[in-house]
Image (tube, rainbow, N blue to C red; front, side, top):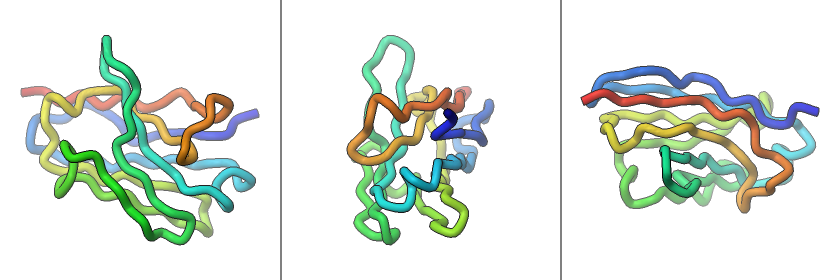
Length: 116
């Protein structure tokens, strides 16, 4: 069954913005912290940001601090990632999952490509 559906990726120029969305199964979303992860070509998947069940406890990796904002809408079982001042090094496939992640919950991801 479908558990995570990511959307909102695309091609953007450096300095631009994108907003990613992830619709999750209620059974997963309602009781878990959620995270956005990314995987660039030839690199390991890494955590980008996480948010607690109540929308608190937001943590970001250093390279995106001040540029990305994670949020969640518990009524819609959806987690968002607002990305601004994008850089070519942000190019990757972006995934959402609970935090900590579970191998059972990876979706297809959404491609973000930032051109210089």
